[in-house]
Image (cartoon, rainbow, N blue to C red; front, side, top):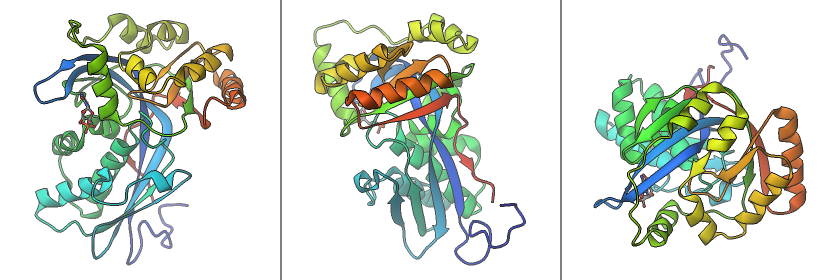
Length: 313
Ligand code: C5P
């Protein structure tokens, strides 16, 4: 449709809404430090946005309501624990208005999968409500609100490729060439706090080093050389995710057997990510992973992808 299409419900008449498209992420490096006094962990997290998207549509309503569609919609909470609902609340509170909005989430990112799907919906809802309510909130303030919502939410807003420090919310953009990925969606989810708790248990008595971004990894990411990036991928949460979900070892083995350059757990898991050489190889690896019976579904993606963006009417 064109911008002049007045029948488009996103731009025209009562019930007009704003749709925001927002990407999933994978951490190509996730260096985790010791638990801090506040319970969070200092990170050096190299985020990469991938071309797997949720869409959040905000439309005027009498009260704050959330609906969700998509294959895993039944796993998405529709109450105030949903980060999209919380985003509407924090933005409305800042503006001194009532968060009366209907948020519809078209969900494609795996739920509780380590790909920041919930965080993505939070960032998307924030941007959608900001546009719907005509607030024009400065970018820095939006980023601060994102950080309030969760450690991964600022990156969902920004997208591309970035180094996250602090608990992951302090972002510095980094350079990234194009890479191709296959994601294996696991049966069931994993809770992020439980994976960090398992990390703490596994590192008890160990002197956990201060997390630092790897210069070798950053150079590989910038170069666009998939072999170099494959050799540098690292996730300190992987042992914890594998400890809680030992079956993931079979998925990682199936991806390696199928010709992936490298595989790793995505964030806190249980989604696994496989770096492949090109789109043709992606098709082969995805087919082999599906045939292996070690995952629920696969998704083929490329990176980097743009951050949360209003979908033009
Ligand atoms: O920030 P967010 O709400 O997404 O974090 C969810 C949980 O993940 C936290 O409550 C904490 O248990 C864990 N976490 C952590 N260190 C981080 C980020 C998250 O321990 N840097």
